[in-house]
Amino acid sequence: MPFFNWLAVNKNGAMSSGKIFSNSLGTAKKDISVQGLSLISIAEQAQSVKLFKRQVSLEDKVNFFAQLHQLLDSGIMLPKALFVLSNSSARTEEVVSALYLLVEKGSSFSSALKEFPKVFSTYEVQMALAGEEAGDLQRAVKSIAEALSFKFEFNSRLRALLFLPVITLAFFVLISTIIFFYIIPSFSSILTDNGVQEVGFVFKVSLWLVAFGAKKIFLIAAAFALSLFLFFKTGSGKRVRDFVAIKLPFFKQVTFYINLTYFLDSLAFMLLAGVKLDGALDVCQNSVGNIYLRKIFSRLSSLVQEGFSLEQAMVALKIFPIELLAMVGVGQESGNLALMMQRAANIYQQKSSKIISSFLNLFQPILMLLLGILVTALLFSVYMPIFDLASNIQA
Image (cartoon, rainbow, N blue to C red; front, side, top):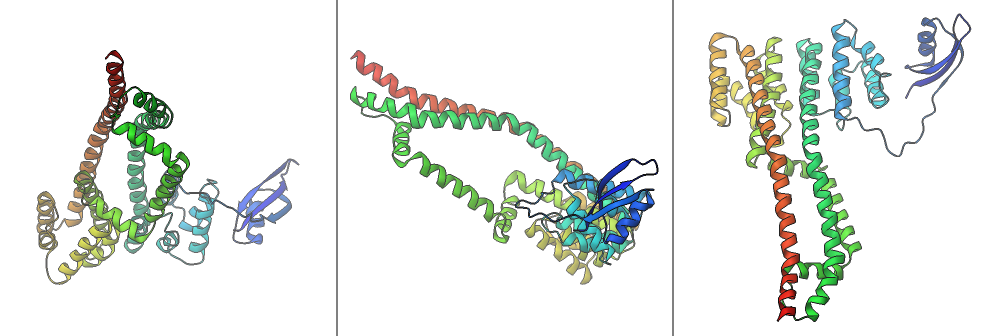
């Protein structure tokens, strides 16, 4: 990447140094001289071999799109805005610098984002494309920043609520491991020597685990976890994940509402920009992240092109809520379909937020209750044979 390390002196004779991103050495020298500095030396930064590249987190993307919106809103052109942001964060400088180079060479912003599928999602690419086609990239970037901010807040709340249960679960696993591999085996021989023939299921499991070996169990568990992780990175794994997301009772509703919000928001954006309905549907269907829901939403465009109204097409698919159908019908009759889509997107974003909040508020106590039940069951399983031993000794 074209990063240059430089050493310069100002008018007062003070030395200063730094790093600048530029597409050429000449441009870098010019940018430094504009700052009133006299160059002493400048050289392209050597590219080190990185075993692990920096990962762009969700928080990094929220900051990137929020700052990009602020720069575009202030009147700065996209290439210059990307150039400014390329030096704003060490975690995003590589990706943003590459975006700048692509845009500087003539690529559209959406095409540049598409070059990084592991960083930018389909929704972000499609919203950028919608903004470019509508001639309002600034608003599209703002919508992306707001959507990512909503997702980041949800993840933050989830991590905060899961912290205590996860610590408790880890402690439970640690104690269970000690009990199964060290305490129960020592008790089992004492029990059998004193006439306790039925030691119980937990004792049998403990003896089997000890015989099998702790190292083998650890390696099998690690291999299984790694295989599962790699599987969900593949296309088949993503299809399985998306299928489960639309079949489980709670996740089904949340997944549908979130994807519907993205779809309605991008559709409203394009309609407000004057894009025809069938063309807007073609683009907006790609903002739906779930593979199976995307296939269903893609049929809307076909039905509209066949002569159906949007309300009739939604009725034919039989998955859209009644209140949404009513809003679409009113929007079509009044000629304010774009405004109705925008209101509907806000409504379903609020609905999904309420459902998620309710789930998070219930999840922590339910998980703690389940852990308590597991601990109680484990204690009873261990102590019941001991009570039998006491009875045998008394007899």
